[in-house]
Image 1: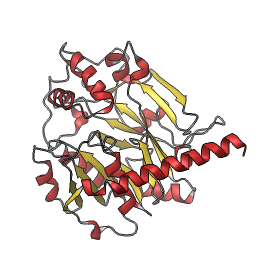
Image 2: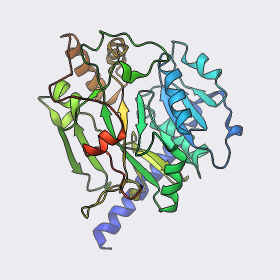
Image 3: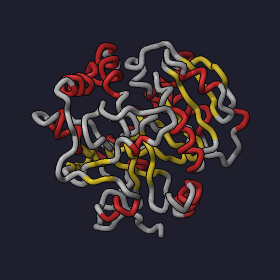
Length: 339
């Protein structure tokens, strides 16, 4: 290892320690509402979530991941006013914390999540997702998440990548109302099969992916500002780990090396991103006014401006989602060595 590589490794170690220290110092911002972490067993699969006003999504979200094999949910409620916290308090497999502090000042919730991961995640496979993200992986229709994590552990893989795949409705976003408990894919099942840009982050080692309907519809004139679609949502967690930028990248750097640079393919999945439901119209206005998201809610400002024009995201190239095999045929996920 050369001098430059040694210096970069030292810098990344300092960054990781700083972010961990930051999360630990802010642990008092998340106040226990109904902690049930005594129910977590040594081999429990854990799911970590930050949310605000997502009551209508919660029944399907929780059931989806329960059926996949998640044993316990650790949730930070960011001062919801729609009854999300009351609903979560009634769930026997949910530990709930609440905070009234700034989402933006907490690095868009990652300080809170890093603290919970540090405190409760060590030694567990930990899935970190938003309430509008639904993991799909090879054979997920016949094999539980435990089958994937067991294979990964025996193969020496500590982290699992999943491309964020935006799904959207056939018509205008508000045309078909979304109902509590409903599968979001019933109203938003189309996606872009191509139109993605990928480059490597030399410092952190992760791939950076942009494109899809958000890039072409909301950031057409500034595609470099389009949201990142690369995520590493599933990690066999250790106390020295931390997320740096949402779940786009983590430290140590080796957690980001989830692709094969020698021409092969490693196992990967997708996060079906069901943001564009009828509830999104009201939410985009609220989040734009709050200004609590990245770059002063620049993304939500772009959404809100376009939504005023009765935007339709569907194009002739759009595909209707079928299953994980379809995504593999399109090159969006891979079985890799797991067959």
